[in-house]
Amino acid sequence: MSGTATNLGDYEAITKVVQHYLDGAKSGKGSDMKPAFHKDATIFGYVGPDLFAGPIQGLYDWNDKNGPATGIKSRISEIDIVGTIANVRGCDVTELARAQRLMEEARRGLEAQAGPGIVATMDFELGWVELAKGETDSADRLFRQSLDDKADFRGGHMAASVEAALALTAALRGDVAGSRAMAESAVQTARAMRLPEVLVMALTRVSESAVVVGDHDWARRSLTEALQVLRDVRGRAWVALSLELAAIVCSADEKGSAVPIRLLAGGA
Figure 1 (spheres, rainbow, N blue to C red):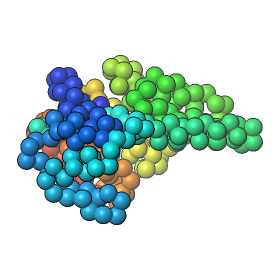
Figure 2 (cartoon, helix red, strand yellow):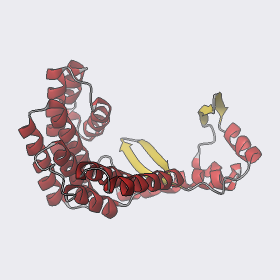
Figure 3 (tube, rainbow, N blue to C red):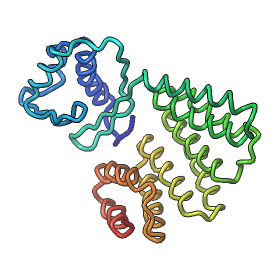
C-alpha cells in the first residue's frame, strides 16, 4: 500500500469496493460485481486477442455467461491514491505460489552446485515474491538471509539492493527510523561503487520507502537526485517508477512539483 498521507478509512473503503469485483469474478455472477462500478461506467480491455469495450453491463453479461472461477485466488497488492483518483493493483495468488515453488526448487538444486552468490540472489528474489503476497515479515527475513548467505556482497551492488529492499520492508512495518537507517546505508553503498545505475536504483527505492511512510520531503530529495543522475548520464533505467513516485509526491505538495518533472524532462 502506498500513496499520499491519506486517511486509513479511504484505503479500507477502496478495498471494500474492489472486493465486490473480485467476489463477482469468483462467483460468476454479474450482480455480485455491480456494487464495484458506477451505473454509467464503461470498460475497455482485451479478452485474449479480442477487444472488449463498451458499457459496464457487458462485463456483467460476460461474467454471467462464463460462470464462476472458483479456482481463482486474488488479493489486492497495492493501492495508490493521488487526489481523488485511486489506482489498485492486484495479483493472482495462485500464480505467485507456483512461481515461488519453482524458485524454491531451483534454489535447492543450485545450493549444492552453484556458489553462494547464486543462492543469495535466489533468496533476494524470493523476498520480492513474499512482498508481492503481502508477507512483509517473510520478505524481510529472506532479504536479510540473502546478505547472510556467505556471499561476498557487502559493499557491492547486491548489498545496495538488499539494503534498499530492507528500507522498504521497515517502512511497510511503520519503522521509520529503521527505514531511514537502511536507506542511508543503501545510498552510501551505492555512492561508493561509483556506478550511476546502482545509485539511481538505491535512490528510487529510498523514494519508494519515503512515500510509504508519508515523508514527501525525503522522497522529493531522493527523487531529485535520482533524476539528476538520469539526466547527466542520459539514462532511462528506473524512469517509470520514478515518474509514478514523482506524481505521488507532487500531488501531496504542489510547491515542489516543478523540480522532479523538469529534471525528468531533461533526462528523458
